[in-house]
Structure formats: C-alpha cells, structure tokens
Image (tube, rainbow, N blue to C red; front, side):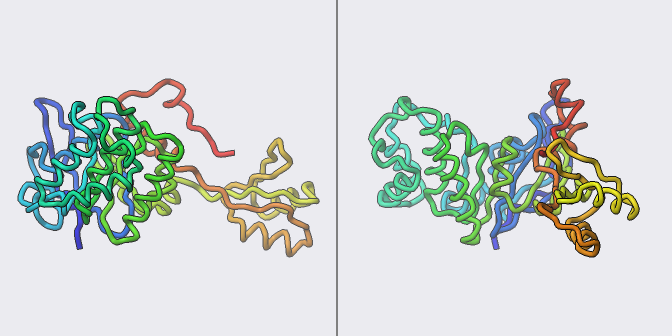
Length: 312
C-alpha cells in the first residue's frame, strides 16, 4: 500500500513559517482534495513531499521512503506542480521522451500518454506555441508517464476548457478506482466537490481538517429541510406545535431548521398532508470551506469575509 505520509512537517523561510508541525496521511483508492487559502502551505507541502525543498523539521515519505531515495521515481510518483516548467523550444513529444529515457521508459509509453491527454495531433509542435490548457494537458501527460502508484496534481484544471475539466475529473476518479493514491490541490470548490472523496484542509501552514468529504460537510452544517405542500398554513401550524420554527421562502416552500426530511415527511403523513416536495439541505463545499478558513485567510475582500453565500 502506497501512502503519502507527512509527519510533524515544518518549513521555515527566515521568519516565515510556511508549514507548521503538519501531520496527515493520504491513502490509496480515493481522491484526496488538498485545500486552503493562498499562503496556507499547500504548494510548499507538495514540494517537500517531492524532495524539491528540505524541511526545517519533520519528514514526508511515499510508501515509507523519502522521494529522493526512490529508484526510477516516475514509475512510483507522477506530479504536476507547474505546467510552465517545460522548455518552450522542445516539442511535446521530445519533452516526454527525455523524461521517459531518464526513467527507463519506452517511446511507446510516450505515445500512450499523448493520446490519453488528447495531444497526439500536436505532439510535434513546440511547447511555446501551446495555450495554457495545452501546457496543462502536457503536464498531466508527464505525470502519467510512468503509470505511477501515486499522483500529485496542483491546480490540474487551470486553463482547461469545459471538455478538459470533465476529462481531468474523470481521470482522477479512474486513477483512484484503480487503487492509486491521488492528491489534488485546488481552489475551485465546486469542481473539488465533484471528484474528491476525502479532504485535507490547511490554514496558515497548519492542519484544519482531515475528513471524508461527507463528514466534513456534516461537521460544518446543521440539518435543514425544505418542504412544499398543498396545505402550507396547516403544516406551518403543526410544525410550530412540534417545536419547529419554519420560515417561508419566496417560492412557496418552507424551510425547517434543525430537522431532517424523514422527520418532516413522517409528521406530514401522520396528519394526512400531501407533500409536493421534500428535501434535506446541506451546506456546499464552498460554504463549509469559507466557514472553516475564515480566520486563516491571508487576503480576503470585505464582502467575502463578512458574508458567506447560502445555497438556494
């Protein structure tokens, strides 16, 4: 089993502590979303895991070993940290071939990942002619080159068009289903909620949350139900008698805080009230994230810091 293990990891740059005594583990078979405001330490942590920076204290390992000790590391770990890092004068194919040769991989694998990333037709084009989205696809192709057990991606949707976003989303989910360890850093909450099974959230270099997605959302929200009925006034009176405090929305629905759909449905059924619509509501990932990180955001506009959007 190939885990990413971070243990009491600390990284200081002069007086600035970018990562502060951080401990968490990323396991296989799921997509772990790596979240946090700008300056939270996400990119620094990924660089420390990949041996690109040395920690001030603590350690980071992959499968129990530091990345720098791995033989043919592309066969073990695939990573995308900066899609702009590829040399612009090389062709996409030659860029991947250079990586392949350095890790004893054949040219056939290069063609496979070009096909996977949708770049086969431009494999002979120079990278400097590529759009941001094409460079992003090339970086992902490079991460997949060694068919690795561990995949680490920093903002993989950056620059991708809608088709590309769907592609990378399904790719990450497929890699997890195959039993690989997938760690994905992103600022796009709606997109993260579509693919992540587990969340690790940082704030000012410290761990704020390490939970499955569902548990994270439940931990940041109070039960709430929306209901629409043919007898709104009667339902309202019954809810009040049962200790609830329903509020009416402009669209004719009632919102009942502190309740679950099963409770309200059973109550309506017992009173013979026809229900036209009944649903539990939960905060979105964006709402839960903003609530958790409100005090850990280095830069925030007045509107964002004072009010969080509510789900309609």
